Length: 287
Image 1 (cartoon, rainbow, N blue to C red):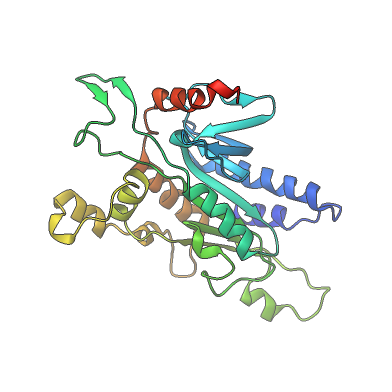
Image 2 (cartoon, rainbow, N blue to C red; image 1 turned 180 degrees about the vertical axis):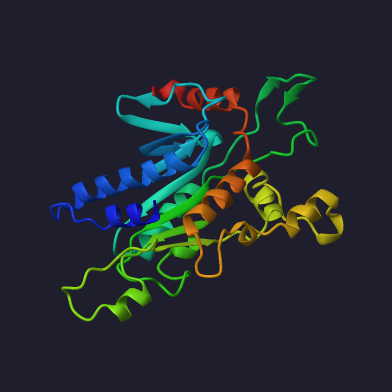
């Protein structure tokens, strides 16, 4: 599956940028459809919005859970997804990375704010989102993923805007080993996986806070309970599958990324009143 993914992504499509870009986005989208649970929807070319009237840059691929989100933001082929429903956003790039473009894109995602103005009847009580101390999930933010197709295997992960993303998935064409083996242009380059996946987050406690409590500052060490300490000890790098000869990057990523999704687990309850107030705020001038 790794070889299939890298080979398809590096296939030339008539040298037409728009056609090639759309083709590769669909390959990436299909890749995520194959590895994430069916509870998530995966769609292309959307905008993420919040109840403060902020709108993100166009998102190539969004992974979202519409369990609590009503269908009031779709208009034909244009889709606006409330940030409360979004688990991950994916930006797809081919050969060249522009730091300014990537920084603007990630900022448009980071500027979005979830609202906790929700009221929901649960099994044992009525959840009122604005009440302090009742919910562990107070403000979510999407996982930002960069899917990138460099020609050669990269040796750094913090340049050209890559450090602004939570996960970077690189499907490189030529590994360092392949480049040493190739003596002339007639020799075929094989894709033996050729996936490099880098995580910005280190442990499950960091993930719990970052994607469920984005409105709160990090707790001090002396305030952590036993569960927090257990989560802090569980590192993302421990979810790697490997043997003596090689790493299985795709299989590892399936466990790593889905563990991250399990830490988010559910989308925020939809804050109906916050969006009602958004629509009504400028109702008097017809906008």
